[in-house]
Image (spheres, protein in one colour):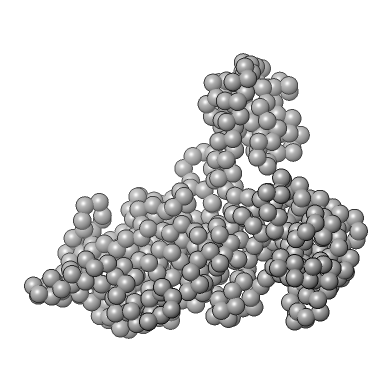
Length: 492
Ligand SMILES: [Zn+2]
């Protein structure tokens, strides 16, 4: 009996963490001699959380270990594949398929999905954060938000998705990397003196560990950052700002100010790391303000799960899909040029890409298990991570479809629209006259202004006094345009 509320490996393998109806189904099928009927099933999802255009397949190594030794053939996309929920024609994309006597895998549906759903959600979230950080280092700090038994799984998925380091000792050991971290506020509090804490930290840390001082314990970030730099000089690698939300005001402003003051005193080498309530939405503006690296916690560990389902699509070689599912075995083709996906009945030849017309599409499903025997090595985290990194520059964070699609995070745009509508209602209540198409805000969120204009556009809209100065002068790059009735005309 474990002291913690986690299932042991033996309990998972024995099907104890399975929904009871699968166990009962297996018993009923056995009683009626149907458990050995050959059933082909696919793992798919109808849609991805938060309107993500893609997920990052992860957890495949554990899924394969779960099914290893059962009498099944298992094909799957390579781990780290960025996959859409559906192909270009709306067909649900299989990320994994199982083929064999149904009784051989019936009770493993629950744990199989659990292994894939959560890891894939975390990996996709990490990939989106890495995308938003645009090359600046991101560290996974979120294990404290979840059961400690999950820490290695969460950090592996975050690593596959693209974070540059993890804080957990065990996770790092399993990934073959050095754990990363700075210092807790408690260290400064116990010393009772920031400079003494910084000096002791420097003296006792292994020589290769970068010295990063936490600079918001008692005083202003600027004052403590300067103190840390003056105390450790060249030895100081960076400062970490973990400013609590209640003191933040504008976190961007604090970062700009710290950068300025450090530079002014000749501490240009000191990097600025930030942590606390970070996500893919606020990272870009913090990066523009001068942050050099990001510690992401809750947002990553608590990433939405991808709700995969397993459906039997073929029975004894004959199509047998339930309502709403496409029957038969499928192959997943991907275009090497434009990464468009197409599902076709298995056995069909590779088509020329219908989207770019430029290349022959390539089959993606790989055979991992044959009759329960591994016929290909289990996915390695570093290989899966490399795969994500190769695809990431070629995809967008936003779903394609509208002509307003850009490469910025969808939510910046959504937040700007939401705030613009709020502001419009406020100004309307104040009796503002919108008839000339005035500027409503030079900056509603970082990099976005709000302007009123007519549809179709009128000459008055082009007069300088009716445009946002911030946009004209290039201080913001994006705008929300409302008509005089408050409807969104454009946002980009
Ligand atoms: Zn193509």
